[in-house]
Image 1 (cartoon, rainbow, N blue to C red):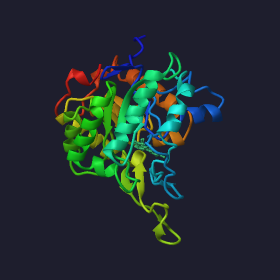
Image 2: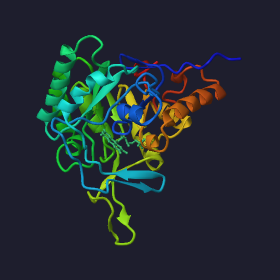
Image 3: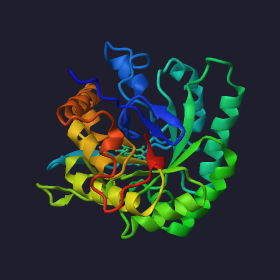
Image 4: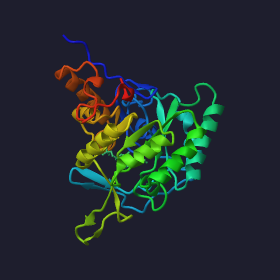
Length: 327
Ligand SMILES: Cc1cc2nc3c(=O)[nH]c(=O)nc-3n(C[C@H](O)[C@H](O)[C@H](O)COP(=O)(O)O)c2cc1C
């Protein structure tokens, strides 16, 4: 019998026990633990936890309906509903038992908003007693939510604004900084390059695609916000294309996502140059989706005779990314 495949990856300085993490806004560890019989804090299926995007002030989000199913996917216009940074920080002690590193997702409408959230986290983490907070290893700057009218997406569609935002946040923390990119642009490499130039350590993509569905009876927009963000298997080919464009052009760790529902999907993103891979919409289909996906990944590697993920990383690229993108 061959040795069990090694699923570990290095996301920059962060060692992950396998490459599968959750996509922001699609898995709430506290809610899952309250609703199911499993303690997801101590038995966490993902290799890292990315909570819902946090903003400086509470946001009620968009009017309902906010979610609808689409062929091979779903559309949402939640509008970054969240209780704000003060409430998120009040929850930190409850997350302390979490057996996984945390990457805090930060959103806002101005540069100052993002800086304020990161500053608030840094202050709270510095003041927290040992064992009273989870292991926050980094931040993901969400400059790509398509469902808020100002800020966020408009920052992430402009290379200069993205650069300014990252440059403002960079000196506020020594933790790992990831910039989450939008697919709603013609040249994703230009935005990724700007984020890295300003000090982002890594990139994650894709956020959802701005889209619209109609109510078939009235032939008017179904979602309360009129438009929403499309995700799920329907967007995977587009996400693979964008991840590979970045991996070919830039040297930085990439968290790939968009339509991942199986272990093979994870391998495909890694073949396109990703180091870690996030699962979003699939979390709404079954609570054990991440366990299944990781088990499938292990089985796929065994079947293909792969001992470690670096053996496939970049296989789909014109240019193989250097070793810096992960083990
Ligand atoms: C209901 C829902 C809420 C989301 N909320 C956020 C969010 O708060 N912040 C963020 O960066 N992305 C958010 N996303 C986008 C996902 O993190 C991910 O980028 C996208 O859904 C593509 O992955 P998927 O096809 O696996 O769902 C959300 C997606 C869904 C479906």
